[in-house]
Image (cartoon, rainbow, N blue to C red; front, side, top):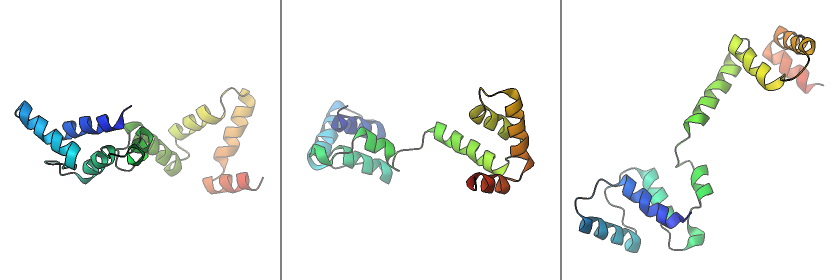
Length: 136
């Protein structure tokens, strides 16, 4: 992907609508020539645009850099996964936590082994379970 072109497109997405083609032309010409970023107030968007529109390609943000930067919003999937992890930590004995652990860590094992593992795991406090795991 051409990150410079993406920077121009991203700028146009962030900018209020242009009223005429000549206004659009003049604003984008100034953007490319002088890196003037008008009518965008959010600092993170300005930082992204400035980085994408660097004249020197080696100084320009790559697609991977953009995805990894804190300027880019966190995908909703990551937020949901973090909520699940927080639930596992805060309520390790809930039925949902048991189902999640069962699904991830015991898939495909013999039922007797599976049940004895779960019974052993949930008969201890989370602290004891963690300490016994580290002391093996």
